[in-house]
Length: 536
Ligand code: GLN
Image 1 (cartoon, rainbow, N blue to C red):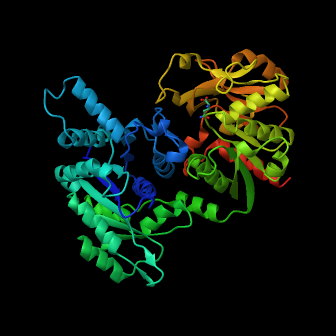
Image 2: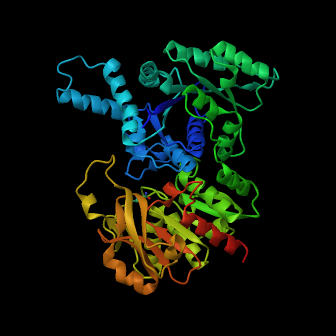
Image 3: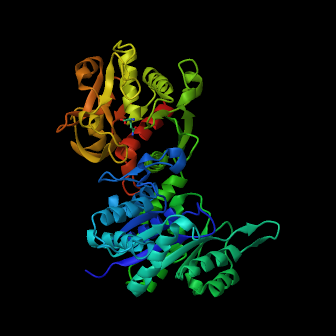
């Protein structure tokens, strides 16, 4: 095994430039050249993980196979590179400090004064290098969260400085900046980039490659100017122009030779051209849909576009597979009830009820599900969405008036969704749910078996509550069929409705496993059903 090469991705000038997409694009291009790659995110905040963060604060919480609750950028890494991430791929300041303080309490520092340098930076470095020991990786890409100059990301930048010194040519720093266009001057401006590189230099880090986010093409002379002021060669100034879709970015980066620059600087072979045939095919399908389907996404965090990131991306993958564009309209479930549901959701070709926590908007979700069930509109319920489908069916078909989840009504007469036994003993919130991949067995005569084309599947979870098996017979008899089971723990993982064109509720999160290379079969089938419904 040759030594792993390290790629650090930093960002300057402003946040939201798309470091996650650039990191994911680098991963994609290197994977397409046959290299093995893993991508990591270092987050400067003090929370241990985003699991306990409100989606309004931090967008979606992405869950890995091994059950880590992580930053949504890990979702981009997986969707682009098709390489699963793990707990070790997301490290926060909180995790770093917790680990150092735990060691201090155990006396592991033998009475030394514990300091940011070297103890915190050593911990950061070991968390970066740990990935190299986890697999036979050619490249470890580490995205540094935040913007250079932020107080809170300084220890991460310092760790990069030290690693650069230790690793020499095995390391490359890619700095993403903004080159704004000033309409009044009619010009692109390089000064913010110069300043941002200077800020990085103050911390002792010279970037090797500068990726310039811009809305207009960079001229030769502008590239030369940036090169001159920032100590890089002109070929290392990479234009990253605003794209129609994030999925264009790997192609644009290929055209700009970002991957080639990285390979040259790390002295890695660059004789094999990246194979982007499937990716290009996907983009072609994405940009040439034959029709449109209208999907309603019913949830309570709909004002924030990142709150349901993986669901939205899964729709994009599934749309391309079906040759349609998926127009997702969001509906705040708090404002839906039986009197207005037809007006709001009546023109949709499919309804997805989203995952979530807490009571707000629950009755609206139930009203939306009733509407989808009664009007034969394709329905997809994910996690809380499935639980609400069970509640709705209990109340309106089984006559279990007041049926509920004990998450929302402790003393409900019909607790059709109840807390899992092992969850009852747990008091802390962080990382304590049923998290990560669990096996699920599908019933052979079910719709989902036809969709997955296999009996044993594995999907990622993030929940505390579950279908209450005491009601199983009643549901079965009335036509809501448990078609996916976790046999070991006897848990209902999937329900289907008999006689409905497409009504599936899943206790897990299929959206975490949809990638460009492997769009999730449930999303693909749901969009196919919506397409059929639209053309009925
Ligand atoms: N709140 C529900 C539970 O804890 C559903 C969670 C979810 O939708 N991810 O079981």
